[in-house]
Amino acid sequence: MKTGWVLVLLGAMAGQGQASEKAWFTVAGNPGNPAVDTVQVDPVAVATTPERKTMYVRVSRASQRTNWEGLPYRSYESQVAFDCRARKAHYLIATYYMAPLWAGDPHSTTDYTDKPQPMLFRDVEPNPTQRIVRAACRGSTG
Image (tube, rainbow, N blue to C red; front, side, top):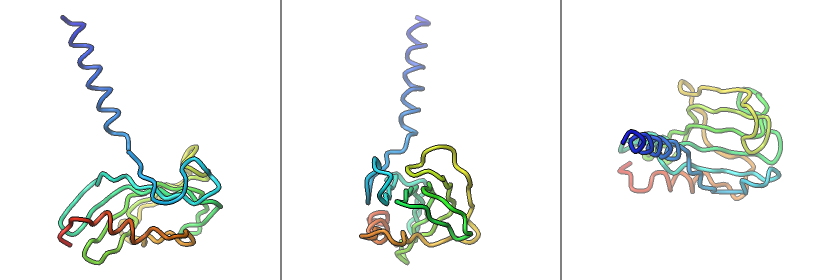
């Protein structure tokens, strides 16, 4: 009988681990090719109010870029706040990697909560910003 309960418990724990993994949706680019700009969104919102949603967005750039503070990076994972009334999105926090496709250890994390930075995807063509905002805000009352 104990063995049965242990197996049930282990199965439940394994299911929780799988459920917590993000299911990234590729909006632009190719997550298997480090030579292209790639933008992915986790479609499951972290938080939701009638006017605002918070979601995870990650980006891998085809070449090295710098953030607002002049910090170099090739890819980053971020938490983004979508203002559905204004149809805009802002970064709240971003974790930067020197390697493309979020490989290796992150080299910096920046908290933009007090001074949110706009989600723009400069030089990504076609630019997916408005497409992502529309999708994130679909069905909101904002």
